[in-house]
Image 1 (cartoon, rainbow, N blue to C red):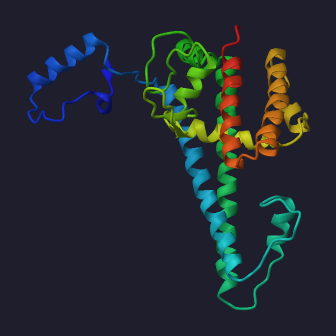
Image 2 (tube, rainbow, N blue to C red):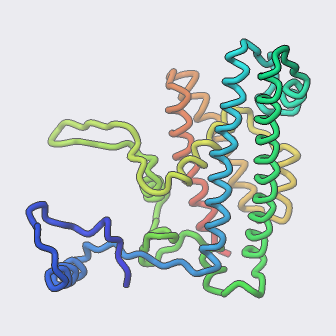
Image 3 (cartoon, rainbow, N blue to C red):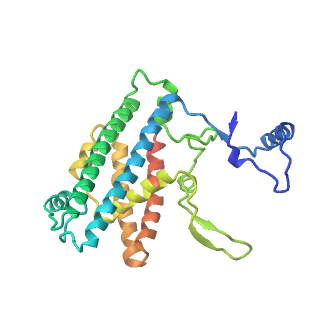
Length: 287
């Protein structure tokens, strides 16, 4: 068994560290159930996680270059036309039509746009690789071990919890929201109850994706052509849950933002927390 060193309890007054004392302390903590065990991922699983990490790093780089281009134009008081989606098709055409009078601005802008296009091409390449790898896992490719396939097909199971890739036992959606750090922090005692911001525990990558996806539910529920393409071959139960999520989360967004006047960022986190519950429902569907 491998445990997480950062979660081993240690007395603040203990300034002696030798192997014998460490072994005794570890044995006591293990018998008391105070050690957090870590599951070492399989090589195939770690390769998939490397793809996800690379995609996340590329997203950060792309956001930086876009911000750099935006600030470059802002310093010259150049503003995009109204009613154009930022970095959409019309916005991209407008950027290509820009010309500058001075000699310094033109090569700087062209270099930044060239770097942006390279990052976009790299992102598309990584997304194709991710789609192919996920398809192999879903179809059960012969070169994938059976245990790895089982873990990806059923990400949430009632089995002993191990940190490092597989979720702990999550019998209800509330446990998943708490695991992802989407629940409010609390410091209560006696009759007083004090709640603060979300705990931000667990995977920040998963939490960011949920909150980012939650912003889409401010729009009226509909099934676009892109969504219809992705739903081909999917289980009808999954499609029904997705449509039910669209309707409920849209109403939730409208109620919190329009009626209760909550900030949009707060509403996005609240909707993301409920979106995690729908993800839990889909993940726990029996095959």
